[in-house]
Image 1 (cartoon, rainbow, N blue to C red):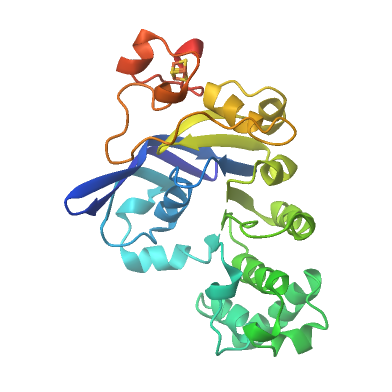
Image 2: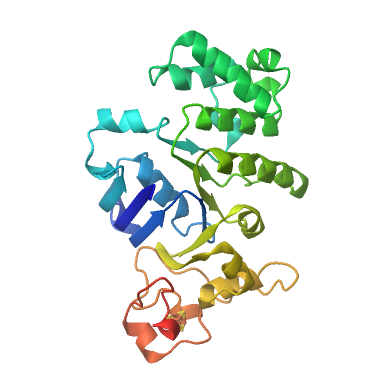
Length: 300
Ligand code: SF4
């Protein structure tokens, strides 16, 4: 087991309302690629950020996130800094705004290692090797570039170099294909295949076809809850939860829209969070929250 999340709840206090972004989520991440999928606004990125404790100050996080026997939510910030970017790294969703525009990209990748105690020369040599392995060539030349001199795909590869530079145990990638066209998406998929070889990967994405290419297991998020956790092959062959079925049916070639709209995260529905949109709704669904790996009373 690489990381275990137990009964995680995240609320944002936005006077006078409270947004319940993650509700009672338990999840285990093994040495694998686990894709956390679901529509935008379902709480996926908030869950990822709560692992690294990079949420804004108005977030209240409860539960446990166990990594190497320690609850990350109880660590002092100093201890957390040693883990962040070193043992667990984060690849942000927007390469264009995530690099420092006034620093050379090679320096930025080396810095990520130097911060964690690696010597300057070794860090720079490793940066060049990483650049070369991800086809940022010629590496010495690319390392001297500023972010504005690189294409979007190259910037993303620089961020991946940064993410893997300290040989982390877990990489969390937030929406790596957001705003990327189909051709470039294949290149990103190849890049992430390489990542799977070096580390466990928590892939946060609304892009189901991208998840299908990479994931070993899938966790489906909806309205702050995980509704289904399955092996990816089985899931994409036959999703079980009615929301998962609707999600896959909304893709080409079927293109059947999911009826209704996502519920409020301020006042989430009582019982099953999907009951207002579900064709199979029963009386119990409106009253009681289903439990288990498939959170649906059809499988209880
Ligand atoms: Fe539908 Fe009921 Fe299952 Fe919810 S618990 S998905 S409402 S059948």
